[in-house]
Amino acid sequence: MNAFLPLSFAPPITYKKMQDIDSSSEPLAFLHFCPHCGSDKFAAVSSREFKCGDCGFDFFVNSAAAVVAIITDEDGRIMLTRRAREPRKGWLDLPGGFVDPGESAEEAIRREIREELEVEVTHSEFFCSYPNEYIYSNYKVRTTDLAFVCETDKVPTLCADDVEEIVWMRRCDVDLDKIAFTSIRNILAKVLASRA
Image 1 (cartoon, rainbow, N blue to C red):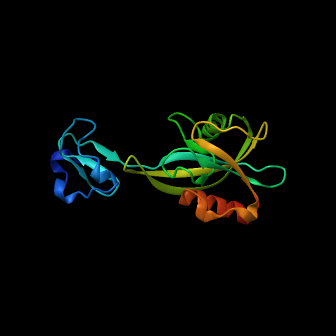
Image 2: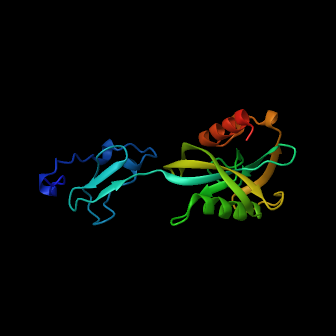
């Protein structure tokens, strides 16, 4: 038996009225038209799934992959960066960024470190991952942040792209309350507990 029913047999979709959509940063407040056919009968089926009542197109709001590097020096200090841009401009972070389409996480960490710190990653090893969400352009972005312990060809001293400043900290001086995002706080807490 075919598990898929024609759209005419699909259960009715309940459409939210504009006044019922809150002006928050959730996808429901932004996604009003089907990206496939342009219909305004594009309804939320759940908090992360939308379905078009005209063409049947299904759209899922998924987590974006991002990578961060854990880099330490010969004295065991952890390298943090100060964010040069929103969200959380001026807050401490780990260097890294989004994985580009068609790129592996390992390729992404090498590219991001090259772009932000102008050094080459000579070795990287997966450490852990944590989910994250933040507001960008009034839209809630959900990510899965993959952390890698990285070695570089030289000690990073220059910063570019999204990095305002490089900050080296002794483990005992890392204040998790000054870290930009929940996922990075969780990663650093695990680093501090594990001596990675």
